[in-house]
Image (cartoon, rainbow, N blue to C red; front, side, top):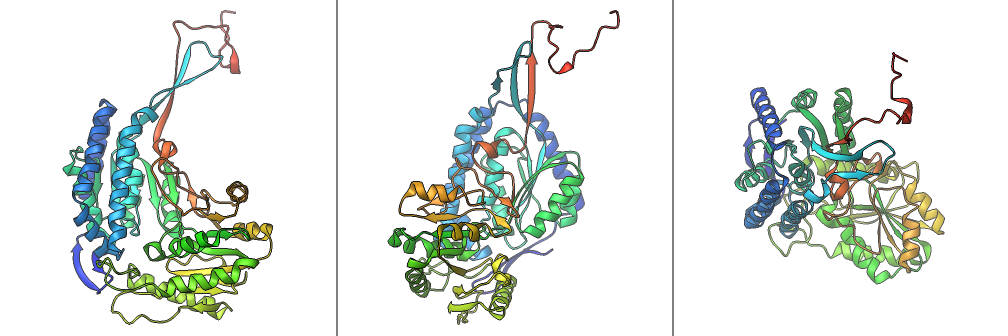
Length: 474
């Protein structure tokens, strides 16, 4: 695996990085384990101060971090700056709330004595993260686990090595102890080796179904707890009484943000028949108004895709969808620029036997379906192997929430853009993975929820559960 930055706007090879050696991996494991042992004796409030400093340093280095992100994977510079601010916000939130979230929980019980659940660190966490949000994906795991006292080893995507190393450098500059976050340019075999190591007690992956299967298999074999955030084919449901001004303003953004390279992008637009034509026409107008160009230029509104390989894969998927009967109502034309640009495309008439019906297309392709009833919309939304997020637009928000609750995904936003914030959980079901990151749920992803029951003296009359042995003298 070659770790290198190739600017997708001009195809220039910017920098290459050597793969980590086995000795470097072993050193990182040793350092991380030693830090875990020392963090167990550290007051959580000390880590909160450091995490706040991480947030400050991220904001201080916003310009260079944003530029590195854009050069690594092509994101519009404004979106890159927004990502840096988001990760700083996440760091501040967990610094502010982590200590309270990790306080012991009292339990009402018939057992003799007082019972509580304490939340302790478990050990080193192995992180495997993707390229599309190179800072945000790290911070979702780093912030809660740093607060709990779990050191982390990071294996980032091979095409965003500069962003990965810069993030780790900022964490070190903020005063985090060595081993808090160690970025290594690992091979997949080395990732498996790390997961097998007893010093690693948790595995977090965001990525493809293929990557998730491999890493989850290794974690399962080693009996290591793991969280998986995988792909998505999120539905965007438009009911017949929806405010179409709002729908038309949000729909194109929900597909084009980050050039459509988002797990939670709206990829399937499920639209009631009475507003279908208006929806398609407005989506065409919004796509046609996008301006491809240098993602460093604030005037650019369409970024290149992250790699040539990704662009070619998407074109192959589009060709397959068309061959299977899909109709192109906009797009599927070349863009006369040297970078990895893909013209936003709208498909209709996608039938169940078309690969586009159930295959995630990770880029600016929108598939639009016409439905004739609310139940048909719900059934179509659920007729999919994935279950990450979704959006519902309805004239009445309460009714929209009723529809949303029938959609089989981990997250649904009603009359709103899909968003991510530290206080709300992130994750999905079905082939979109399991577990949650962010919020109080993400804080507990890799903790030892240890039960402590204390009493002044034993009460031998408490036979609850039949766990008290009979005295042999009797």
